[in-house]
Length: 268
Image (tube, rainbow, N blue to C red; front, top):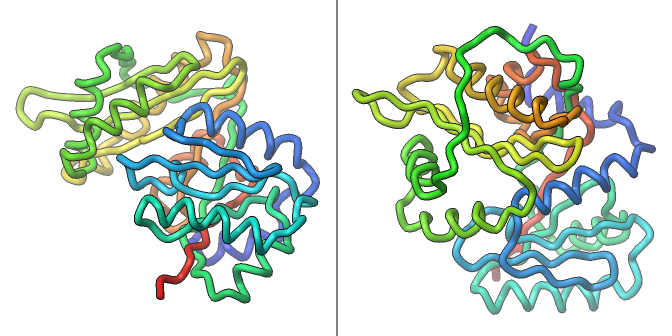
């Protein structure tokens, strides 16, 4: 039986709570895999901002130490002003590394909680990956960005920012696409190999070609590429509301490591 988003929310309490070193490591590789244009620190808080792209991963306050809650109200106000300068409401990313004191404060201030997401991991060193067509990565960032925007039906105005983000990724990256001459871009995925970890980013399949095996096909190609480069563990992030994607990942052996969500400051 498929697991629903509501069921998975209830499962949060059963997730590992003590493996904070794993959470810290996955958060760190996640920052390197999707780099923000501006990163400022206040204690253990990261304030990530990227003017040209709306992604919450690139525009949020990210606390990285559960015990860091000194002057929390003053620091939150200071960080929020940085978002005001960009014309945006402040956003806090709550992971197991966030201080409960900070989360209690934003709840009292009426911030809105949204986008609960699972971080999943898979031991690809032992994984029996499906026997599908193998695709080689491209090194053409512009072509990949065009394909990704087309598959996602996203605004073309995002192209410069997305190209800049991908070009700024320092670890080795594999840009995978499935295209044909009739329909154009059908699927894309970005795989970032950071030593023994491989991050799966921006996996997308065109609406008209879903449930045809393209997701498995392109994801398997990316995982094989990462494994050949000595990656042992793959990780990815997926919204709990995306039940079809979660089912696909679980079929390949991915399991929950931890969950996170966002809180947005309420605009007056």
